[in-house]
Length: 284
Image (tube, rainbow, N blue to C red; front, side, top):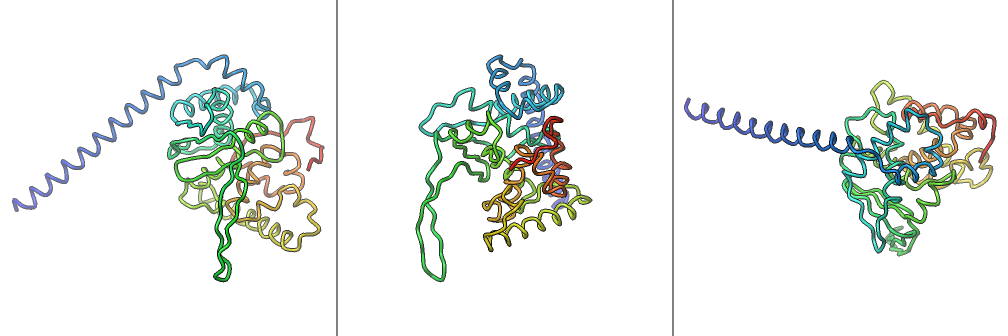
């Protein structure tokens, strides 16, 4: 009897310690967030934001909301330059695009698992070893960015080029789309979704991914699939990251040529990037 009583007391004590640690962590985390949000946004930050193409498509309320998210992101993530000095411009540009993806997404945390943003000055050269039929092949390929566990890698040369003008591609949006994809534990092109939306999302994205893969295999009659491009056919995770880029960068064209795909992305991101003046444009 004494043994079980002692064991119960130990378990209760252990539980109390865990609860106390969690309570203290949560308390100081909340205090830190309050302190961050009490800071006014620097004028230098605002000037940088005003020059970013996608920022100028947001309405007044969205701009105010994302400014708060940017302050939290900048003050809770570590920015590390690789043979390059990290500047306020780098922090603001990267933080803006990362926070844009989650502007209207209801998640319990904002990239909580992300610790470090690693910034290179230019496109990186990465080595790759592939195996085919027992034959090992070594090669090199250019890398504009990468997302892995608690670190996102960004090429500043490419990120800066993408930030101030609307292109098809945006390396920051691409890599942080991967971070969102990872949130449910699987890099499968399906972000954290309510169970009621999971089936339709998977059906639409899988259908378009398979169609794109078939077009790539034949390598002719690309038609509307030129908008998405061959890299998206790598796997479902890359497909999700690429179409996320198109949703923000080329929403008019994506909606026109892939209405069901646009609908699913729009139901998740909920960011209206389509301006009245460009609704009728057919842009590839």
